[in-house]
Image 1 (tube, rainbow, N blue to C red):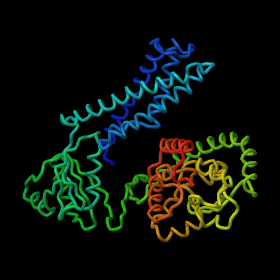
Image 2: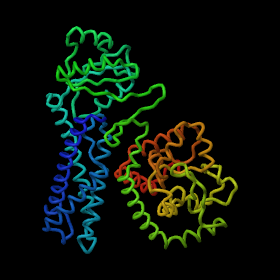
Image 3: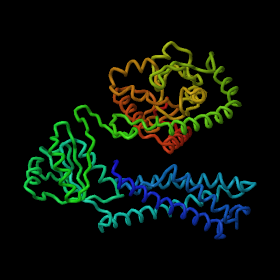
Image 4: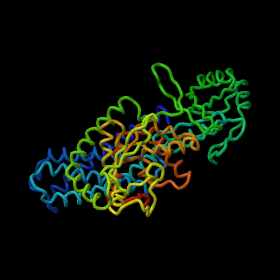
Length: 473
């Protein structure tokens, strides 16, 4: 939703709640350390400045990883509870790490972190529901309410309506919409006020057919220029803010997004947020630093892995295969070999109980250990830590002609792990719809990339090491 007031309102609410979260973290930490009921490291008792720094940094890490979504109305109670727990859990881990840096021993650090997790989770959960009630109360009192009228029959009208109704940053009173025919998939609460012809006739007679703060007009190629000018003049005279809705080509299942280039506004079908220069720099810097550390830590384990692989399956330690990468270019991908040498490696996906796998290879696949050599691909620049998983050339050729947007996933570097993999679309794709869903998630990742999202995906992937995905084979 690109509505300026809505964006500002969301940011103000997010900032206010973030500041409160930091205060709550400091209060929780201070009480636990100084109340005398719990055993805490002696080195941090009475050192208020260290405590403030520790709690504040931990709170900021929690916000960056699992920030509040209280400004979104359509968020379920289980989702709130889940995010609050993950938020508190990440902060507890940060408290543990930061406290360990401040003291010389690990005395009671684990207990301190566990108590902090329980206390902060409980307090934060209570405050989240209080914040939601306060926000809803402000909306009902009309302090942040705007009345809105839509004009046009483009499917974008329904999208804009759903987006507005999902936000608590600004309470909208939707008056209804004018269109020559009723909208498809129109929510019951969105009232049809009449046709555009009726509306323009009323305006031409000098009447005021509706009263609203804002008008959202869906412009299509057949929209008469006089009609647009007449509507703008009507809005100006009645102090109504006029907005133009970007058109959706419903027959092509395509949505265009406004993009500012210089002083001009253009519309594109793919935003590819991940390819902005500042985002590429940040992502590449993280990739190089993280991968370098992993590769150093991996060196002592390579001989052990090599011995086990050699004992169970004769052949090389590493498996390399050509895959499709950025902009559709081909590169060599490296993995620890998890299968016996076979002629179907470049055409056949791994399946459950695949006879080509040897026992340690199956363990490596379930825990993602076989993917670790791909950090070398990251250092080389062929891959990123997070991104769409690179497919075999055989699959690229196979799906290119049957999935229309298949190649869109290659607007970004492939990754060791990705959004599709941590949301249930990892492993063998037995049916076409499974690959289609994977592609949708890959494209969504490219267009909604953030550093926070990468951290979340890495965290979820790490969890799968101890709780392997059922499709990981």
